[in-house]
Image 1 (cartoon, rainbow, N blue to C red):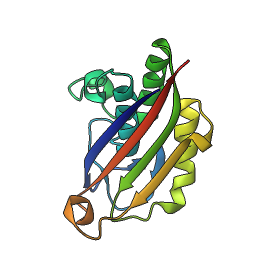
Image 2: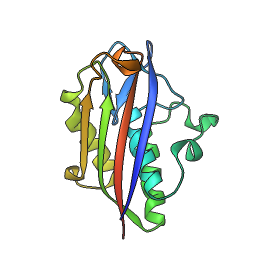
Image 3: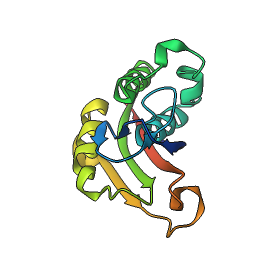
Image 4: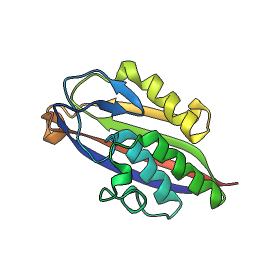
Length: 157
């Protein structure tokens, strides 16, 4: 067994869609980034890559590469899972937390979990997603951005 941690952060801005865990969440702002800026999926990918000793998403999907402009992060996660499989690993479980003052994410968490589980080819019971505010503190609390942490366990097949 191997464990990895992932973290991602993106600025909130008008004129962008808010996508978390592959769910398009209706809201007045979205996350700014080269791809779809899905902080949740990015944190999960970094946790998986870290557990396998394969670097981070910047190494595999650089923001200087136009091929990843607007990319669907679930498609990038598929590639990460494929890399793990090629190295003899499978996903054991993932636990993630999204840090956002608004909007309320609880109604969207079941679909986020299902999207991530399906993409990683695991049972939804192997994926846990939480959301928390930061009591108005810091850049997430002020609404300037969102962040996500993820921990992943991978196992040798």
